[in-house]
Image (cartoon, rainbow, N blue to C red; front, side, top):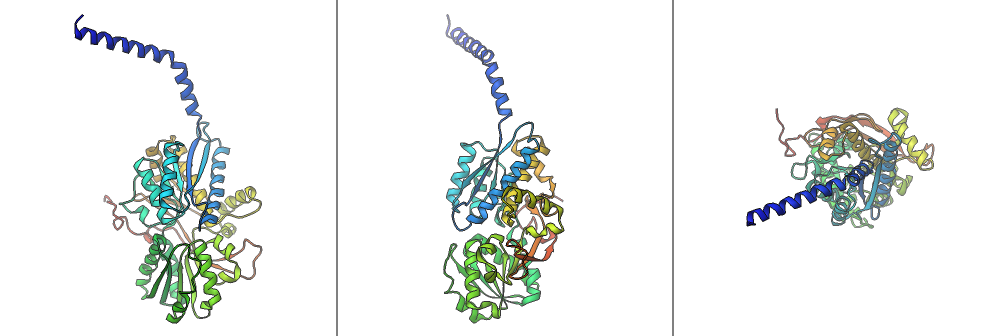
Length: 417
């Protein structure tokens, strides 16, 4: 037998063997396909359950679970239910990347929603982008929508610093004065918020007296307060978050800064106000993506609040909790609209989505997938509170408008005409 015939016969035997194995394995393959068809739709949810932002992160999880329940109670997708896989990123970019990689490669998640830091969300996004997995971020960042960090799989459900700080600036600067000091957490969130205030203030002739920076997680602000007071600003802007906001607001109040200076903050957190108390936050105003008290005028807010109350003993959702709800619900609605869990098909469906989950109409801008939405201006109160949850007065709502965002071209996106 020639070498050529020997090779042919070997190939023929291998092909016959493979065909026989395929036939014999057909029932198993069918069962496997059926099992995969009923497999849960897995959503990875990396957030900082420990650290300075833990209170906000835990509320994100609570609200995200409600979005999962909504989807499952409605029948899921072709019989497939959704499942939330929560991981602690410990407010550390390296940890966030590791947990996200595990979610994708070990747990086989279909999508990722989460983050509560400008730094960790870029880390999570990089892992998802490289593996073509949708990531819907629920934390403020300007950079995540910029072309250098963005991909077709990147979505941003949260407000961004440019939009948030701009809305607060447009409300506060004309009312309280043009001489401003910033007390800034020294990382991307703080830096981007200051930039947003300064850009909005340029047209109003606002003057920056100082931008005083502190490390994230600082406990003592006493070294900064005498300098702030000596500068005699009209406005002090606390550009920090979570526990940092609580500590700086308390200490600035105790030091007497409020006697001659209006204190504002880009994001006035519901959880921070609850932790800091009425006296420390009295009179401080800021922006937020959501306040539960909007339910008197917005039916979607009432519906969301009622579901949260039922699940959590009468408690109301926080602003960042609501983002957890919306971030997960938007992805799952896109699955239904796309009739698929394929990342590209779901991405296309998300780009086309118009939704009102809890606060009014929203949509994702085509060029960068930023959620276009309203900004709520609230002020903390210490009197005439109906109950322990009634902590803010809603002063104004800046309606959703793409014109308040940076342009797509400025962010590095090519826009066809």
